[in-house]
Image (cartoon, rainbow, N blue to C red; front, side, top):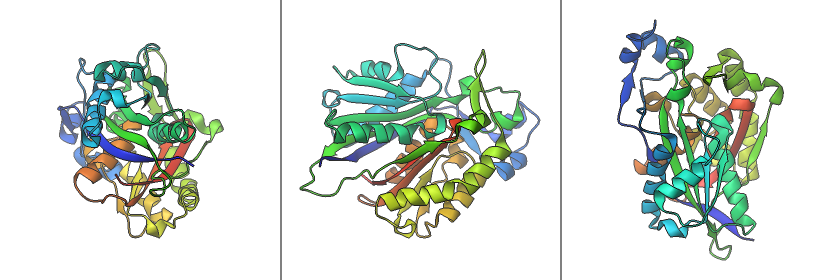
Length: 316
């Protein structure tokens, strides 16, 4: 059976950096308050002339270049985002136009912070079913546009950015697939705990409820995702969780039992970038050489809707 693998990754962040000291001049907060509660030191903020598709396009172009592919090699573009302003054209179509991809299928997926892992699973399924051969999978969000910058409980969390992966078909005769089976689901009755609602749309959450859910309910689900891939957590080379809050990432990673793994902590320098957080952190680990080609890596997204999705992938 045809499988799929990640051929290359890429990421992009806006040039403007907002520090905790900067935020302390905007709302009643301090560097100590922020780092103690969420572990974030800095975040990147896009300008008014930097739309979501521009962030996504930069990350996607980097992934394509790393893979040694041309725009015409892509036949499906999937963008995970929850901060698209317009209903149509969708972000995937806008990215395809920016990159000059001639005739791809294009779709957006809105699963908020778990968006990228849902999009990656969708791409894997499309390749396995023969519906695509090479897919651009992108997580991109401009959280600064949906943030109330007078609310210190949320404005200290967010950042903007994008991460991308090129997914391609693999020949089963040459080796095992690089993307393992997904384990996904949600808790609809708790969907209100993370939301982007209203006019204008604003991000809000029930922090304590999300913290308890993430640190108590998600570890066995993440371990089950490893089991579906035929691996024990101790076999993982890296764990890339949604970069929500260092106080969630560290206990969750510990409870998963990935004792030998590098744990991505990009949240400290990027903040919570929603659907961008996993590919952004993953791409940085690859770029810095902290993980090697072929290494097994758990990608696990969670958040809005209270949705979750995780799979073990092989590092490109």
